[in-house]
Length: 142
Image (cartoon, rainbow, N blue to C red):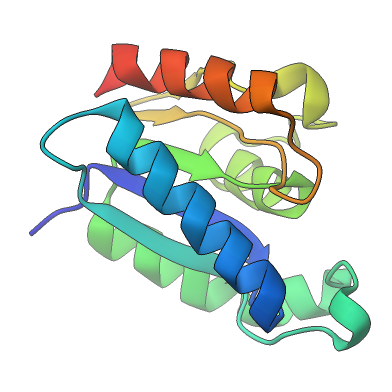
């Protein structure tokens, strides 16, 4: 079954962060549409960088073929890059450029051919109001 929503995170999060990310994804998917969306969750970087740091450019480059393969195989209609690293990777792939900082682009749909990219501020930095604005945008798309 093809997913309705494809979320991309920066890296494999640490356990506590992973629970927060999954909870946010589950709550967001449940509130966007009924019946529940079919979501596919992946990461730009397949490893968990030490001390939960931002992945390096080298780590992103080493894992880029895996993300390209997933994106090509799934061909998602709506892509949600979660955090700056994911937005950069998705922007380069679909828009041909780095969209820049995520805060001004949070919950602003970016059209790229058949795909719609809806950036989401990283769960460790997101506010309740930002979650609500994201959900409102997503309800209009799915």
